[in-house]
Image (cartoon, rainbow, N blue to C red; front, side):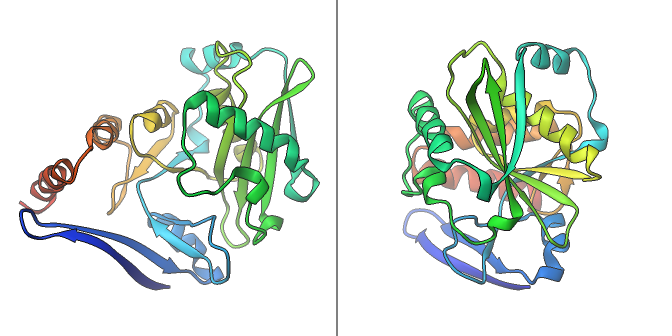
Length: 254
């Protein structure tokens, strides 16, 4: 594994703030080690070798799935949902692109990186990708793009989108439960859910078997994860970021 850094920006006059992204090139035989240590593939890398990045990754231990009251309520909110899993190459891209665009509009999300959704999906590694299709009342309403790995028994949920045709349905959480079930049935220990930042990602802690990468280890501390996500959403200025950085430094180094 070759680790490298993008030193993007810094503020040294009235604060001590350095903005630096951490990346790596990971050999195929190193995939398991990388996943176990907080690395994830940058899915939008346009060429080989693929970049992997460090982040507050979230994963679910599929062996710990429980059908408790909350889980049953989520499942019951989505009656008559039909699920089909297709290879990426067999998927109607225009159809899921339409779902993506409806999802982005409903949530008010901005595609600031110009990624453009499934229509612009990078062709690399498509053999390792599947699309879970969720149908309700005979129509495609949602999808999840999943990644598997040649050298590691894990699965990553890369992107979930749905059209919010019936917002009372908990289709997002329903999809996570179904994908945990799918992973467990196929002998997959962990379902990775990509990084957890800001309030929109707090829901990830609600699944039994939840863990997040804190930069040193995998942690099941749900209160700390929620606190960190809330702090993310409070950041509006460099001053906010600098204050949060020093709080973090005191926590870990004093």
